Amino acid sequence: MVPDRANPTRVFPNRLRRASAFAALSLALAGILAALPACQTSDTLSSAAEQAAGRRTPAGPLPEFKDALFAYRKPLEVSDGGAHLVVPYDEMKDINQRDEMPVRKVHSRYIQRLPASSERDFTYVSNGRELAVLGAGKLDGTARFTVIYLHGRDGNRTWGFDDERFGGNFNRLKNLVAAAGGAYLSPDFSDFEAEGAADIASLIRARTAQGGGPVVLACGSLGTKICWALADDGDIRKQLAGLVVLGGFPDSGFLRAAYSGAVKTIPVYIAHGSRDPVYELEDMEDFYGALNVKSYPVRMTVFDTGNHGTPVRMVDWRNALNWLLSAASG
Image 1 (cartoon, rainbow, N blue to C red):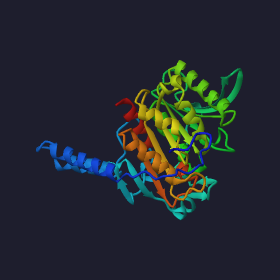
Image 2 (image 1 turned 180 degrees about the vertical axis):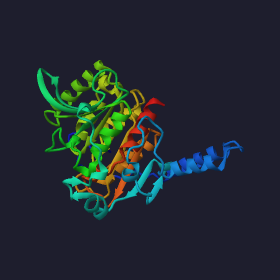
Image 3 (image 1 turned 60 degrees about the vertical axis):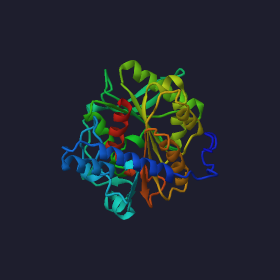
């Protein structure tokens, strides 16, 4: 049983057994390969194999940007046709060598600052209050899509907008979204309860009214609580194209909705450190397994030896967002 949203750290009492699901998926894949036309080239088969192994970024609207620096290294484990990956993480390489000042400032080759005209610090209105939000990309008029990052405990809007912290990964995200004609937002919000969820719902409605396109919510740590609450809001759910859960926790309500088949499907991309001391990896593995066994659109990347903050630094945004946006449109 998945822990309730109000108690996200409660451990699952039972681990799901996924072996039979893996076997069924393997048989299905074998059937698909057997049915491929005889004239299909070995190059096409090789590309399919590489994508299944997690080495290729899915096709989608986000163009290449510093992929050689940010793409996942060769996976240590691949399962479910590439939907579940365990990828290497090395603190010496991924923090100490990547950063000029460990944790505080990444080396300059990892970032490319956007023109000042492409970034903005402005406000949005929720329940009669003005709240601050940082934005990049196509903020006026019609955007192809909107990505909103929700920070975790003790954070603020600057966390998701800092070019030099978090290994330069938010700088890459801003560049990717802007180049694809999308909008990126990193807002402040009141709390991680109902009021905070209402704040972000107001922001989403404002973006929808402006022509902001489908919305992807990226949730860091405790910010996941707001993402689950918004996915449970019928009106907001219609606007969502996907969720990115970074070092987060599962939600029983989302599982019930997914199993019911009565609501819009929202693809989910999960990234988690294997040694996360805040939210157990096993809980997210069970959550992934419960969705995957029902053929729900879900992917999971585990960073081997990674800690709680590792996914924010290490998630391959181009890989995650291209898959989410493609899955949502498909």
